[in-house]
Length: 136
Image (cartoon, rainbow, N blue to C red; front, side, top):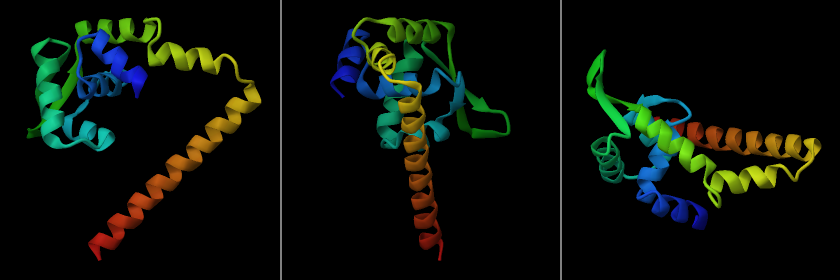
């Protein structure tokens, strides 16, 4: 968390804004609803973060064509440039992880990836199980 906080502050972003930017950037666009599901932060915090990123022109917001109540968030060119800048900053979480990943063997990486996939699958199954229980 320290790296994220430092990187966010260095780029004049709040932590929620940083999280939004880092989540949308690899995908280039997603709905605000999808973003909320990924980030699991309160709707008011998400809305405030998105509003700030729209005001600084790092994101564009437009209604989803088939559902005017839903908003599509699109990374702007300015936002993409910021993402690239953050990814390359010395001391950023991205550079730190990159340097750590350079120290592990291919076998360690494969084991790490398998562990992450197992955790993700278990969490997804747990979520589905809880939803099924709530719907009964």
